[in-house]
Image 1 (cartoon, helix red, strand yellow):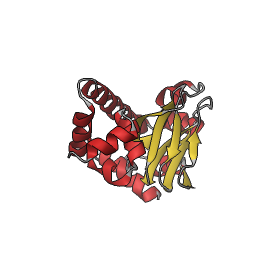
Image 2 (spheres, rainbow, N blue to C red):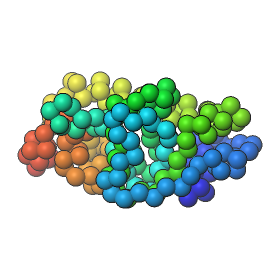
Image 3 (cartoon, rainbow, N blue to C red):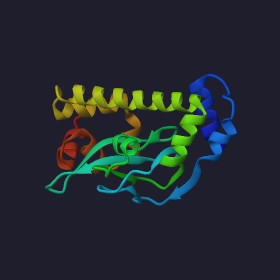
Image 4 (cartoon, rainbow, N blue to C red):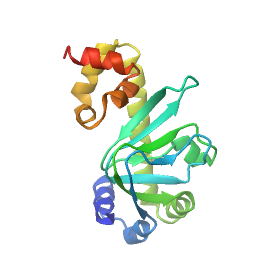
Length: 189
């Protein structure tokens, strides 16, 4: 699994950084089951995850019990509660394994050590933060001006993997619509 992460880092940096093996040793392999929770609201987020195989959902639960998905992450992507991890404060988010996953996890303490000892590692993390921020802002700004059918069309055009790998309930949570509305409108595509 670590060879997958090795190639990912090399691709991001455009070269093999010094001490890459030391960085890779800081990651622990983790295999999970479907629906396993990696983080719950109120817990302190102690890991960043690199997805070798599978899908993770980052979401919150509203007072009425409905889930609102911030994002789904698939192979070759990184996941954490960014605010909670950076500040080591209780999380407001959940991270769930939508599918059985093969993950590489780095703890907060190891992450801090790697960032201090190997600056290229921080460059990779900065790229991850920028992509996450840009995706979230783009989606929020785009979705606020769209009706439900336009959101489904946007998803079909920009993230078709979600429609084939995720349940209607999960996709509806991401789109900010009810599962019933999603099912009804999906037939109009």
